[in-house]
Length: 232
Image (cartoon, rainbow, N blue to C red; front, side, top):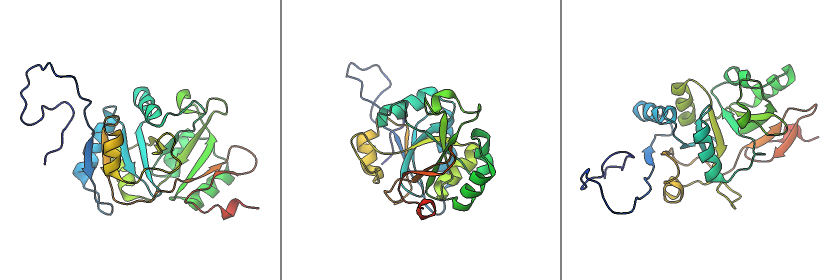
């Protein structure tokens, strides 16, 4: 059956004003092939992001929720969905380290380390540059997370967009693990986001989080990425 698209008049209704209570519009729902993402759906996804939309999309570790970097309203909606405080480290997801290096302060050691582990299920926390809006940084440490996923849908989206996406793992309040079923996402948060991409099963483990802003690397969260390299 045809999907309801926000702004359209649902089938069977007229465009005349109604006295019925307003019903929150539901998100669009795209089924994207995990190995061969449909170019048409990727282009439509990018249009939604550029229009200020909040999207749910697959990565190589779990599903994530994201928006355009400079969009404060969309970022605030992500905060509301996840109930995040100002101490949360948002992540910039990009196609390559060269693309993300404009947003972080990288020394040679950190550059080599990240290069050796990406693309992959890691998030690296680094000092942010002036390219990053202050509202995206950790309030006290002035840091930002960066990530290069090994997922064809996510990479196709980033390629079409031409810039990183502001992102966070899709973990709902009071839950410990990320959501993994796009149909359940549609039921629970479909009113709060603009698009949910069903890219198939991509796991339910969050990324491993490594802080690289001090003298020694520090594992902040053990997730899907192997952290044996950082264990002394």
